[in-house]
Amino acid sequence: QPVPLGVPGEIYIGGAGVARGYLNRDDLTAERFLKDSFSTASNARMYKTGDLGRYLPDGNIEYLGRNDDQVKIRGFRIELGEIEAKLAQATNIKETVVLAREDVPGDKRLVAYFTQHSPDEAVDIETLRMHLQAQLPAYMVPAAYMRLDALPLTPNGKLDRKALPAPDSNAYTTRLYETPVGDMEVKLAALWAELLKVERVGRHDHFFELGGHSLLAVTLIERMRKDGMEADIRVLFGQPTLAQVAAAVGQVRHIDVPMTKIPALTRKRSI
Image (cartoon, rainbow, N blue to C red; front, side):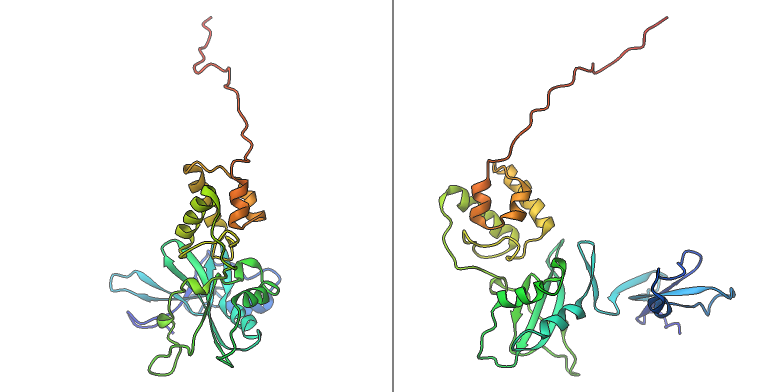
């Protein structure tokens, strides 16, 4: 049923460009590819996108987000409800909500919020992370975990997602703090703190446990090179603590490529 101008509704796509369905997924095809009641062709289909939008007065469609809990982060489509269900299975977890937040432009992260059955019994963030790592691929494991006394609700009793707070430094996994040693670790700790938006970084802190990801890893290596700290990105993935990365700085093997002997300009021989 078409909605009036300005009223939010789900976006359906029809026309010659619509596929016939999902390969080997008859159930998903039946759910998403529906008969196009606006076409005279007997086999015309519409695709149920799951996206919300509304018509603007100028005829354009304004995108309003997803109709379900699916989000896309760094190329991966993620069902937030699947993460919430796995998190709810952890000990002493009562309610869970997972959001994809972009508090820093261009840096979208998964943030988990939870309440406890027994508020007096502390839930260790690292335990929650390990619980999810054992059941989900790495790209679905939230970077931050925030314990709330209660989930914020709207006046009609529904979850108020906009009122969920931005994660603070306590929401990230931190190891027993030890002050960075030496100029290299001190410089690197300041750079990590700037990129990861945390207050301080200890020499045993883990880049990815502090909210780092592959794109930030590339940014880190480039920033290090600009500051005169040469490092191989493979070290960051294999030995991701501050002390380990600092120890590997300067161990990159440079290969000198000789200048080519091909003339810059070649001339055709005249006959």
